[in-house]
Amino acid sequence: METNTSKNDELKIRELYQLLLNSWNNNNASAFAKLFTSEGDAIGFDGSQMKGQEQIENDLTQIFASHKIARYVSIVRDIRQLSSSVYLLRAVVGMIPPGSSEIKPDVNAIQVLIAQKENDQFRIASFQNTPAAFHGRPELSQQLTEELQNAYNKQQQSGV
Image 1 (cartoon, rainbow, N blue to C red):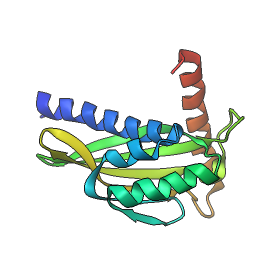
Image 2: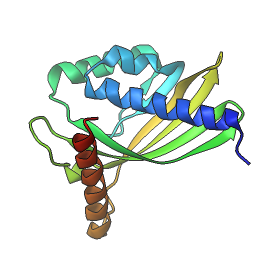
Image 3: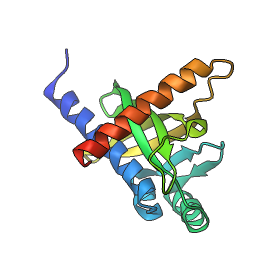
Image 4: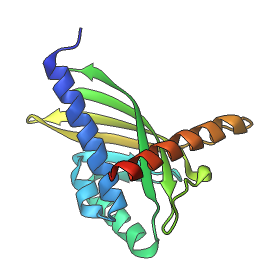
């Protein structure tokens, strides 16, 4: 049975995840890094690893300075409580390149975020962004792309 506390925590986890994506979409390395615990880690789409707020901010500052980044579109698949202070969020994401309104299928990904409550506030302990390659199963890639494109189109229609 779900309690009001766990429901409230789930809302906070969703908000934390959306803040992470918004920070990326707005090229804000500092805001992105501050969402992590002091020793939090992030694993990028290419397998690069960042440990701690300082490295996350430094690495993302370089990325944002040298690349026009695509914007995330996400669908949260589920949130599970692992303990009284730890949650796991699993989502799928696509990316909309600058100047486009179409999902770029080759960078679709599965994201996993582990949130830890510290002093009544959730922070990201770990974040992983894994390519959704679906080797040998192009129909799964197409299905995910269509689902993400539909989510993006709905966001655009509602002004989100």
